Length: 126
Image (cartoon, rainbow, N blue to C red; front, side, top):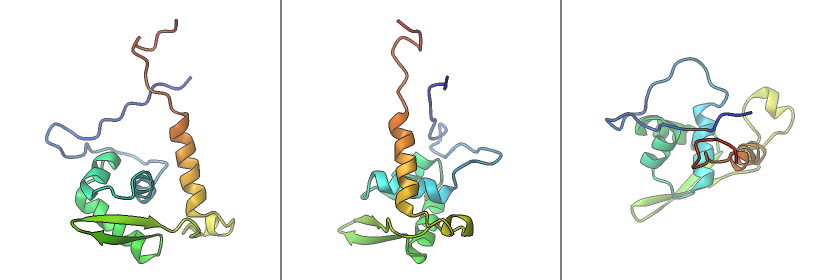
C-alpha cells in the first residue's frame, strides 16, 4: 500500500528545500503540470508548488515558450498561460510514438486524482 503523500514546499526561510539524486519527472514537466492546473498562476506560486526558485521557473517557462509548448498573454499585472496540447513531446523516444503534451498532462492529472488525502485518524482503519 502507498504511504500518504506529504509535500513540504519550502524551508522556514521560504527557499525550496534541496534534494539530491534523480527524479522521475523533470522540472519542465512539473512546471507545465502546475500551469495546466492554473493558467493564471504566478511564477512565485508555481515555484512553491514545484519546489523550485522563481528564477528556475522563469527559465523553464522561457524554454517552454521558445519551443512552442506554452505561450502567454499579459493581462494587467498578471499572465495567462496557454498550453499547446497537441505539441509532440521533445525526446525522440516519445516523438516517435506521437505522444503529446495532452497525453503527458492526462497521465499526471490521473495520478493526482488517484491520490487520497491522509485521514484524520492517522491512517488507522475503522
